[in-house]
Length: 140
Image 1 (tube, rainbow, N blue to C red):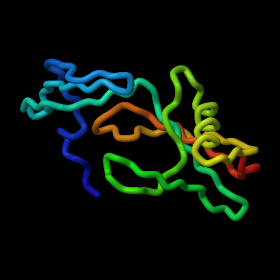
Image 2 (tube, rainbow, N blue to C red):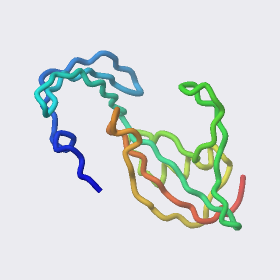
Image 3 (cartoon, rainbow, N blue to C red):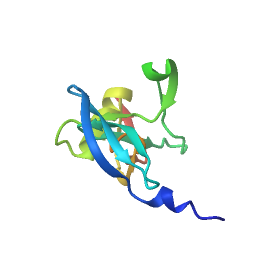
């Protein structure tokens, strides 16, 4: 297995930054950067003001609960884990319990934190903490 070229592992140098959009959900900026090989590049960044949450919920037969929802950016109804955006200063567990109940009507009787990951680190630093509810206690 070969290593990645060293240029892919070196940080970039920010030369300038320009904000091009800002609303209550996000801020978009263009950074002029210098790549490790010395070439200039305009990089688009999306800053979310709060992180998202998702839940991996298993039923009594160890099936994963997914929901179907229309998503405008892909113009399709897709299958996805239940979740959403945490409210400002909301703890991840509280956010996912709220989102799970709002989106599916389920509540879980046991919770386990699974960790967090960057949703799309090529465009944003937004993280998605995943919390597991091993068994749904009831559907409301």
